[in-house]
Image (cartoon, rainbow, N blue to C red; front, side, top):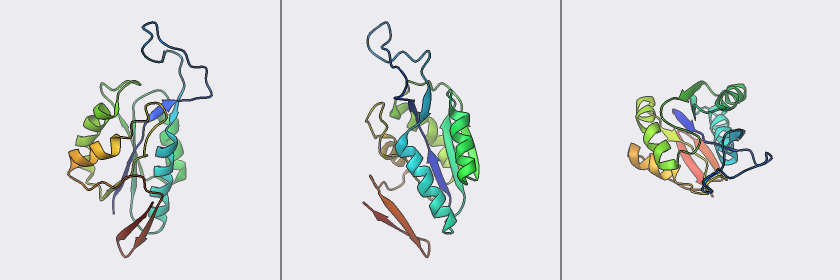
Length: 158
């Protein structure tokens, strides 16, 4: 069972946040980005499944400042493959743009399971998982609190 975990990088709320000159968004000039908390949980769940015999874990992060730290941490936790998604994404890219950018790569990886965080604190959107599932033609289950693997069958807990 191939497991893919795309992650988002979000502003570190410990940092001082300032609004840009237009007054419509955060000024990202000096903003430190970290992994979304719920995406971090998705990585942990993927690693736990791998340890129970599920198969390799691939973690994908957009090529933004902080991505290397996220990917190295995922490797230290047990991820088998790390991919930095390069392209036109910037720190303000929304979930729709991120899902479209992830789709060709995810299709090429042929995942049996894609785990994403339920939402990120920077947009509270939570659409990445359902959008990516739709683009991949895969079923979607939202807000899962735990996964159990038994004889190649997944049982989800909410």
